[in-house]
Length: 117
Image (tube, rainbow, N blue to C red; front, top):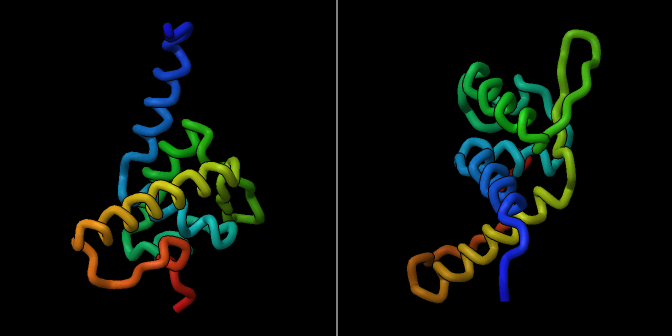
């Protein structure tokens, strides 16, 4: 067995580094519900607009999200739904492992982390 091309692993690692932030993962979870503006994301995450904008810039540069302008507002959505699905899968594995080890007493559904309140 031999790895033929390390470049794809370098690109993969770069992609994962762009998601290696709790705020960016939360942004992806919010955007899974619907397309959102920076203001809406700021309210959803309860962080300043500047923080959301900075994270969205990183995510857009790595092609994790796309944007469209409507008047003066810019709306964001995942560039590919599979990105969100991959994040959900990792959260499910994490939560299941925590339950097995007794580190998690609550019943948490990884698909219901974002509420409509």
